[in-house]
Length: 328
Image 1 (spheres, helix red, strand yellow):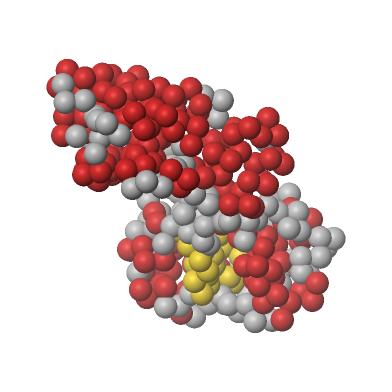
Image 2 (cartoon, helix red, strand yellow):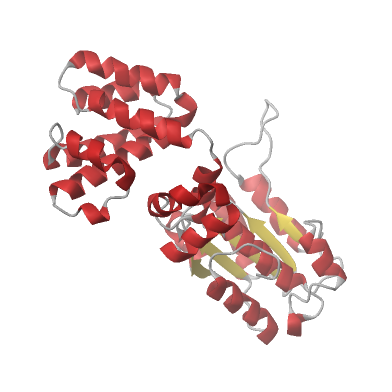
């Protein structure tokens, strides 16, 4: 759309229309799961906002539009993390970065009608940083527009949310995802139907899986290890621990695969095989039904979610995997 990739054309067009009609707001929250192309839609919206021909924005031919398409427009600013003592960017966006944004917002645009600030990972804004931005959002310069990108608006202070227009990016339809995979990854035609179901309406996930040459092999191994995961023999728990340790960079993906398998086993127990996501593994999943009843499926899903939360808290990878295998 206008040279940008967006999976929510109605949202994008509505934002563009607000620019053309002169009804755009000064602050927006783009909420939705990672992989919804929210940042790309923000870039398109920012392009329209800085366009020098607002009636036809984004015109694609003015100086600001040309710069925006090249990601070099000085009036479109992406918030950056400051660096720590080790020289690496900090995870959080602190009060100093927020104050820097507010101070910069007082400077008029270089050559565009508006100046746009995009914060691509708003969940990392500390409460202090949000409070530092609050005054600017309460009394913004007439030319300044702020776009905060975040999984859910509820992760921000209510004072920030109340002063912003919340735009929700929901799951994309299966038809759109399927056509995207076929067009962008023709070599994945045979597995496009499975990938469409597996990504659950998130185009970024479809991109990640289709481009990952190791995904199919890892999925086969993860299914094989399910037998050990569901075993009542404590020794098999160490096989699970070893598998996770040997694939530590893919631990999150493996947990997601196991969750998907457990979901499908639950559905098979309920007699609805047509709703199975991993339909190409149906025979193997039916076989696992003999080891994993519906009650264990529910318990297993809860334990996997807990394991993922443990990893997020920096709990040792092997310890989290062993705990999962022993408790299930």
